[in-house]
Image (cartoon, rainbow, N blue to C red; front, side, top):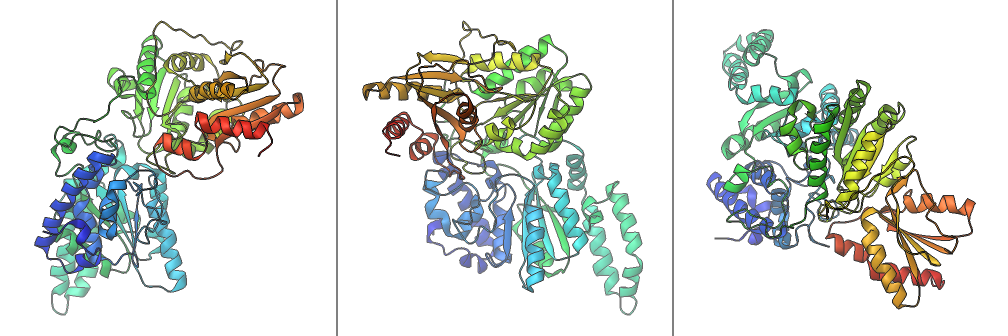
Length: 621
């Protein structure tokens, strides 16, 4: 039996029999479970798409034919089938294989993805470029049903359908994104999943009637209106995709290789927009992932027999603490509602959704809608909590600015996974929120260093009659019930942790621990440094700055460009003769790797920070 590394993919796939491909599917699933259990990663979504990916690579010729994987977390099988199985030991590891498509990694990765709902619009662009250049290749977008809750997907569908140009959209429908899908689109797809009549009716008109000698072709054309009537009678509300200009095939069993390859070959022959609706099972072939697809959507290293995580902290995560505090506050105030974008459990709002189902809103993968929806709730007298990952919240920049801040509405943004998040890399780091949120008039911007501060900030944010954002990192933190913080408009967050010296380090939220260790290293080198825990970014309070300080160092888990350090430097250049060194992430997209490895590389560890400070004072840089 060949190992996956011994195949010459994708070429070897072309000559495989159906039986060989079915055996290969089993082999790939075993390979994925073995490797992801060691490295962590997105497992359930990849297990569910094995047969579909095999069929795609047998029927189409990558990289000549362009495959675009929406979000991209389901591209592991694609990576195996394009010759990268030998690199899977390095999956999501520093300087190793990315968990998402990367053009720098392979010519088969046509388009870098990481956020949802983008594939169809990107495909529309590639199709237009193909037509303008007179080229001849296929363009295929593979998108999940969860991503169809994002409005951008429909902008792309509308564009391709109206163009009438040849394109293939594969809808991988497993009934989930990360949390179970909700809303009208999910209900519509549910009707399609249970209907086997529509495709049969189409085939009857096209093949049986159309084949009648002499009169068949004309009769089939004349029955086009009847075919639409049949469509509506079978599916009640019709097929949304055909109304957008697509020829619809489906639902197709996404684990039936024979059916998949047949439909793909037929779609390839058509010279028009085609949408193929494929039904798959998330976590297919691994009982733990089938039972708990949400848990195994993105998971750390785990025991493949039991499914239990290999490493589990006894400390709570910032996300879980936020969820606990939200429940406590909602019990006291019936105006409090919670909103998320398909990430209820992941953002810590699972308990809230069960305790207060009528006050919990999962709007799907639609961050723009989530924010404007929150603005409407606030206008209606409610107090909305909007819990969204930092890297996803940036998709709603305009809505935060125009719908919330412009109207000065009391919406509390809970910005999860802020800063460096590690193994998911460029598309998931939350390194820009300090920069874009601090630009917005009327926004209060807070960042806690621990769970106690998070609770106090949530209470403070809810007391405001204006927008507020609290950004906190991925990971675990302490929360001591004996420690209580209280913030008011006259006493904003901020605390001096080491007495002021000529060097003063102002650290943002969770970077405080690094600042304290940096100060200890500086002291051993003959420099004394004070430390300020900066928990309020905006409004910027400089009252803790000492007249003794000649050198101010800012330390933040955000890009330097437009971040806290530059805000502070701009203020100080006009107010005092103080030199400022800003330490943070560079003006670049940061690759994947562990947080500690990335901080080491970019000089954000205590040792590296101390070295940079010494060099700066001694004018070596």
